[in-house]
Length: 245
Ligand code: NAP
Image (cartoon, rainbow, N blue to C red; front, side, top):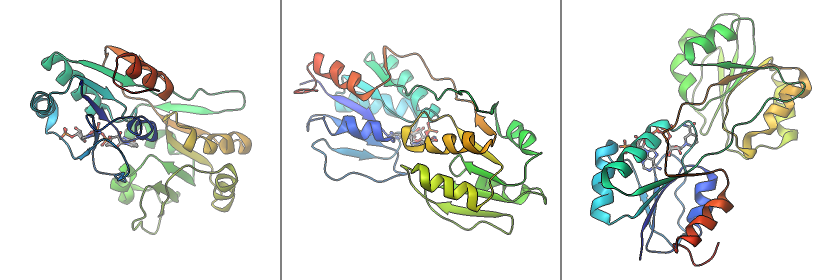
C-alpha cells in the first residue's frame, strides 16, 4: 500500500484528511486544533527543516508528499519540495487561487512590514487580519492610530490596540457590524483566498475602505498542482490512494 504524508493547517487539508485511510499520515504544525475523529493518524509538530522531513519520509516509507498548507506558510512548502526532491518521491500541492480585486475595490499591495507601515500612515483606525505578527509592533503604533487586531486567540493589547480573538468562518453581517462599531478606515489582510475570511473584503468595498494586502510569498514548483479539494481527491483516487473521491 502506498503511503501519503499530507501537510495541513487549513480547512481544505482537513477535508482531504477525512478521506485518508489508516495507512496515511496527516501532519500539523500544532498551532490550531488537532482533529481526533480521523481514520488516518495525525502527527503534530515540525520535522527540523527539509533534512528532518526527508529523514522522516525515508523512515516512514512515504511515497507521496501532499502540501496543503496555507499560501503564506512558505517555509514548510519549500521544505516539502526539497525533501521530496532529495528522497526521490513526488510532491503535489493544493494551492488556493488568490482573491482578485473587482469593481469598487481599492486594494493596495505591500511587499513587507515596512511597506505596510508606510502605506498605513494616512489612516487612523486599521483592522489587522494578518494573524499574530502585528503583536510584535504594538510599541510602534503612531499616536494618531488605534489598531484593531484580529487573531485566532485573544491576548493583551495596549492603550492604542485592542486584540480580538476569533476564528473563521466570518459572517457578512458580523463583519459589517465590526467595521461600523470600530469605525474601521482601512483593512489589512493577507491574500489567503479563503471563502471563510472573504466577507471582510465585501464590507470594505461597501464602505469604500481601502485594503492593504500583503503580497503572497513565492512557492516552489511541484510535480502536480491543484486548486480545489475535489481535484486532489480525484488524483489520489486515480493513483489508487483512496477508495473513492
Ligand atoms: P511556515 O513558516 O511555513 O512553517 C514554519 C515551520 O512550522 C516549518 O518549518 C515546520 O517546522 C512547521 N510546520 C509548518 N506546517 C507544518 C505541518 N503541516 N506539519 C508539520 N510541521 C509544520 O508556516 P507558518 O506560516 O508558521 O504556519 C504554520 C502552520 O499554520 C502551517 O501548517 C500553515 O498551513 C498553518 N496556517 C498558516 C497561516 C499563515 O498565515 N501563515 C494561516 C493559517 C494556517 P520544521 O521546519 O521544524 O519542520
